[in-house]
Image 1 (cartoon, helix red, strand yellow):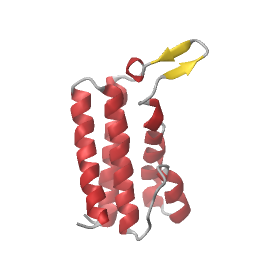
Image 2: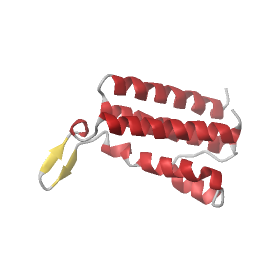
Image 3: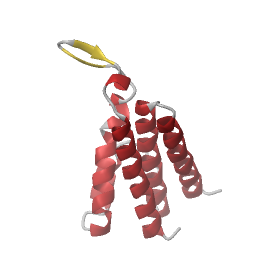
Image 4: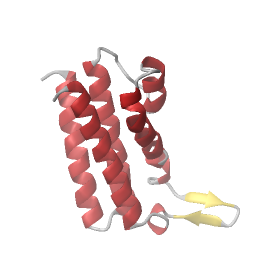
Length: 132
């Protein structure tokens, strides 16, 4: 199995896990796995394009740097950027001058559905671009 194929397979499983987590009330975890599925789909695309190894988790900047004029990637980059906001916020307590909250008290099922939908769009849009 090539690295591209491995990332594609793992991305698919992450998105399946996101749906299972959402359906069972694990909202922050579902959002995190949605982000991970989108990230791995994006890495698969980048490897397919001959870029790598990619150690960064912030992929929008890699897309913008390597494909600055690629209009077909505009929505993908926007969705990746949106999903990257959840990498840490869904896994750790969030605090301010009034105390801390668990991500489970902040994120809703609608947030999870939105994250999963965006991640699926990233995966499907990239698959169309690389012809898989």
